[in-house]
Length: 258
Image 1: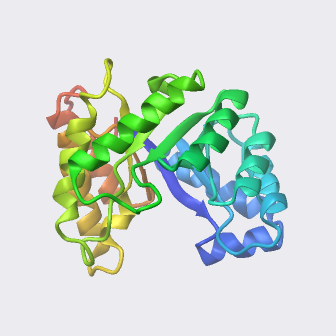
Image 2: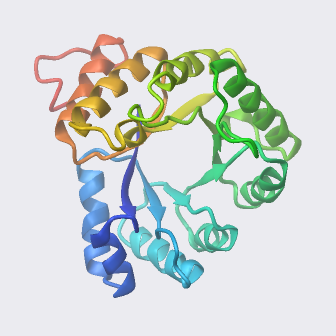
């Protein structure tokens, strides 16, 4: 399981304030904390509504990579802000994200090719998020084939079936699990899959319990990666236990410390 931390994000007040004040020491300590807790990559997002988006992203990327060489998942809906982050990065880059919209693929796949980046592909288009696993699979296949036209092979992609809040779309939880299973037949070797885990519990009570339970279910379906909170120790323990039960990691009595 590939763990991408969600915590370097301007949606969090503490991160947003640190970006505003260009508090490099706080950002760097926060980034190192995510890695200490088990993150293998860091999602880097300056947050919404910033007039200084490109400059803030460039500063944030440079600040983080001054203290770590882990991959950076550059995350912004704004193409200028996204591009600024990608160009500032010396670390390995994951672009977060494209959709199946033609205009967006035409902008982001060339950018990924130019910088040797991997890409998260969201299963949605101009019409929104599809209602079924089958429709998600069609969009995933479109993004795979389009990426190959830009010389980006499937092993550089992460397919995201898009988790929706259980409180608002309860039927979609099972459909996302079905999509994760189905995606594995789209290519040989199977493409990697990723989800933004905390979306499932948005607005719900006892969010950590919902997140942990869903994570175990997704891993059983073959999920490859997740953007999540590595500081949730019980969530990380759930992942470790699932890896043992799925025979992905060797059992030891102290497997939680391994």
